[in-house]
Image 1 (cartoon, rainbow, N blue to C red):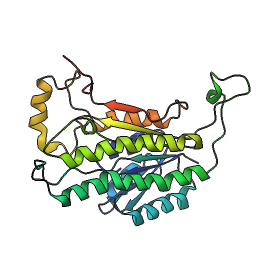
Image 2 (cartoon, one colour; image 1 turned 30 degrees about the vertical axis):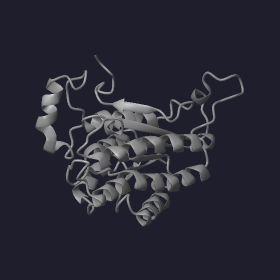
Image 3 (cartoon, rainbow, N blue to C red; image 1 turned 90 degrees about the horizontal axis):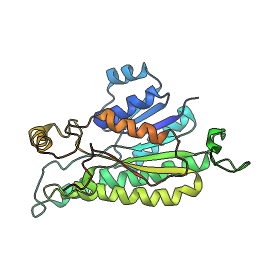
Length: 268
C-alpha cells in the first residue's frame, strides 16, 4: 500500500509540481481543485502512480468532507497533507481602496480553508495506527529508546509575503502571515500525537499567478532581489515538500523552509 498524500490545488502551478514529485516518490496523491477534472492531465499523472481528483474548494467545509472521505475510502489512511491551494486578489488595490469582498475571499481560501482542512485531517492522522518504527528511527537514541514513528505530516505552502509587505495586496500578505501562525499552532498541538507540521515559504515562483508581473520581477532580479538571480520553479518548492514528508527529522516541527533563492536574508 503506498503512502497517501492530499495536495490541494495539486493540478497546476506549484501544486502540480508537488503532485509530480510525490508520485515519483511512490505516493498515491489525492487532488482537490475547483476546476472540472482535467482528464488528460489525470491520465498522464496516473502513469506515474495512483491519483484521484475531487472537484471542490478548500474554502468550503462540505468539500473537505467529500475530499477526505474519498481518500479514506480508496486508500484507508492519510500520511501527508499539503495545504497548497491559494489565490491572489482579483485586483491589486492599494490598501486604502481595498474591498471587503476581496479580503473575505482571499482569507477564506488561503487561511480559513486550510485551517479547518488541517483540523479534519489531523483527527484522521491521530486515529490511525503509527507505522512500524525502523532502526533508522531509533538512530541517536539510547538503547531500547527508539524515536516514536511519525503518524503523519502536514505541510503548509505559504509565501515570502508572510513577512514582506506589498501594500497593493494587503489581504494576501495577511493571509500568508496567518498561515505562519497556524503552522506554529498546529505544530504545537499535534507534536504529542506524532504529527509533524511545517511551513514551506516560496519566494518568486514562475507560475500562472506570477505571469502577469514577469517584467517587474525580471527587473528586480537583475537589480539584486535575491542572492540567486533567477525565478524559482514549482520543482524547487516540491523538492522541499518531499524532503519534509520523508520523516527524516522526527524531532523537528514548526520549522519554516524558505524556497526563495535567499531572498529572506537581510543584506547591506
